[in-house]
Amino acid sequence: MSGTHGTVNAETAGRLVEEVLDRLAASGDPTACEAAEELVRVLMEFYGAGLARVMDLVERDPNASAALDALLGDELVASLLVLHGLHPEDARTRIARALDALGQPVENAGFDPATGALRLRPTGSGGCGCGGGGGVERTARDALACFAPEVTSVEMEAPAREPALLQIGSAPPGGGTGGRSSATAR
Image (cartoon, rainbow, N blue to C red; front, side, top):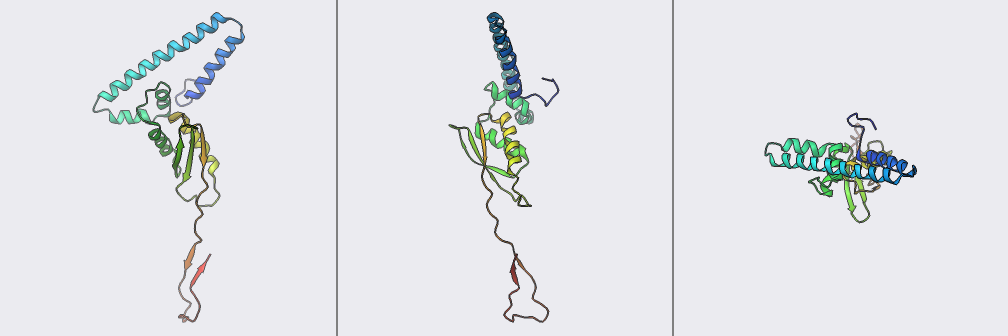
């Protein structure tokens, strides 16, 4: 796990910690396993207490609303706040924040907290009619993993069919209304 900003997230860090703990368990030394698990617990409590203090200080400062918004909008910080139960926004607000960050024309069509399923609905025209929803789903899952990990699955609704384009042209020269319509469906 590199310390480069932006490359670490809660899911990756958690997986790496579990891999290290599994390797220790495989060594057969129960004392080392217990010590490693205690170390992880102590560090989590320490960092959680530090984050709680940061949030308390920022929320108390009436001039810090821009700083608070920046913290809540940062994927790494948001995921740590959620992990420690410190994120001040509810799941619906965090889902909206993640979807806003996508830069894709989608909206929340329903979230079921019992199953973790989130349905998304396209809100704009894709332009080409190619329906590239798979990329949107993957991008949404990545953003939601940081902001709203309680979303465990993302389902994309089929886009609504657009009506046929009706083009109205001018009447042919000298044509008047001689029984021909100038409207053609294309």
